[in-house]
Length: 356
Image 1 (spheres, rainbow, N blue to C red):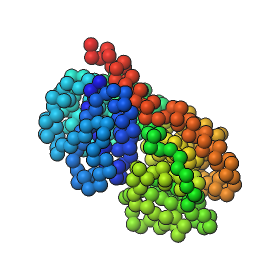
Image 2: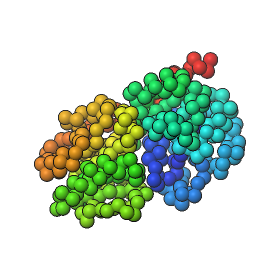
Image 3: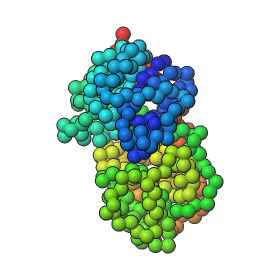
Image 4: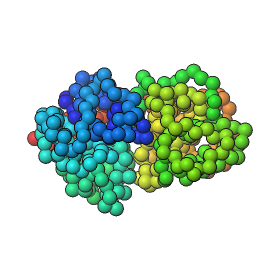
């Protein structure tokens, strides 16, 4: 199969989780014998911080604006499938070009589905117009659960299917290390993720001054008051993620408000941390217990007291058993190889009738 993808970024993981999601999925998809062309808008903030300039498993090309996409019109026209991702700059115009040009399957891959639906409701979504949704043969969604039926019922998608993020288990794996921090968080700043981060990590740090914490990721405002036992790291490159997770006794997962409301929206960090054998403490949302068993694979919390109790009273044997069980779950169901098979199935079966 020849697949063309227009995505936010493949070349730079700075300040976005899209790059690692695309890298894992498309590397595994190419390994199944498919040919992939990834088209990325050439923007200064990613150009200055590229950490994958030349992937060996797909072709990566840059374009300057929507008009310059015409250079790739024949590739888009002749592809078996073309996938447009969320948050693509000028994504509405880029999607219109794809829908007018492609002769194969067209799909919208939404790595931000609850955010997209909230923006569509407000009328300020810059990368997808409501009238475009019925014209995509497939709506591949980061979010599962009831949201899929909503996309079909309210927005007219002919086929909305879950395509969760995943992990490249050949990259994300346990690393031998002595933990430096009791609890770590890896993620770009978001104003609606900050309240749970304050509650579950910063307040825990204030109550446990003898313990060590770390928050890694860009875009945090300068006015945040970090406790003295919380280390701030501006960026951790993907190839350093396994070492980061290995240095944490526990890792924290916190979720954006729109995604908590929708449920069934696992962060890529969940799968990455579990694959690295680090036990996860997560905020609560519907559907999480269908991905991980809260009795033995993940701890789901709502309050600071629960985090403090876990840090103070979980022994090494319990922590190791919990981490091992989480890793086994990811390897059994959430690797990039699993998602590549799902993507292949969606592209070749769900829309067959639409094309003939």
